Image 1 (tube, rainbow, N blue to C red):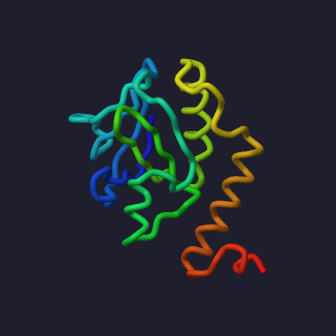
Image 2 (cartoon, rainbow, N blue to C red):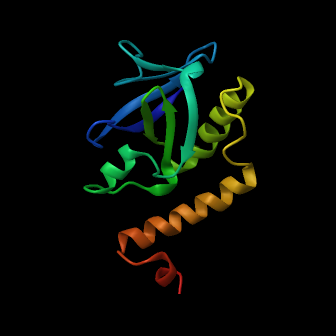
Amino acid sequence: QGMQVTKINFANGKKSTKFLWLSDDFSQIRWAKAKIRKGYSKVEVSDVRDMSFGPLSNSFQKALKFQDVPFNECLSLYHSNRTLDLLIPDARIKTWLMGLQWLLFSQKRLSTPVVSESQFIFKKVALKLKHEAFLSRTPLTKYLV
């Protein structure tokens, strides 16, 4: 399976298109330039210590300085001394977030889930509103009025 995503470079915040998938045994998160899956990079699921939904990581903060990043498509996996920062299309973010959260929680990599399904819906709407306020350079409180 797998899908096309946008990866945010850890060092400079620049975007690049990648193909993302899980290994057959669910032990690795893998990505490569193409669907062919040769020469892929990976993160061991056992190395992931946390995850976040929204542009919270340093990489996303760097990216926001010079390009548009849809807040509600941001997913970060924290491992070692780095993050794997991905923009996952709006239609698929819930599947990846909830699936990876379940995988990490079941392997005791997360002590508590990041979000419940209802919290996800609320947070996704909140992130969309924050993104629109950010684009219009208006504080969220004024944007909502």
